[in-house]
Length: 86
Image (cartoon, rainbow, N blue to C red):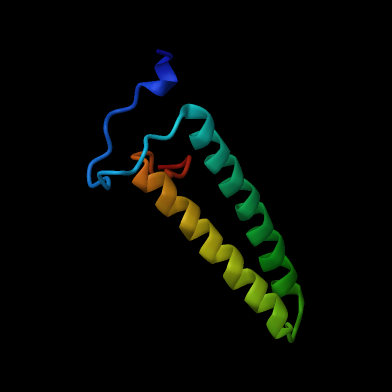
């Protein structure tokens, strides 16, 4: 067994929820990073526009929900996202 596959068991895990492999966790973290970059790009564009279109705000909201969903999946796997500065 590889070291990265040896994680402490997640507490509060549903009984039928399968453990995620190190590759799956890395994929979730990469997806989160891509969503954060997209969130930052939209926020930058929103900040530069005096009157932003509703569609841009809706896109921003969808990105925030997607990040929250990935965070929840990571937490459920026992590997919650921790910012680098914490």
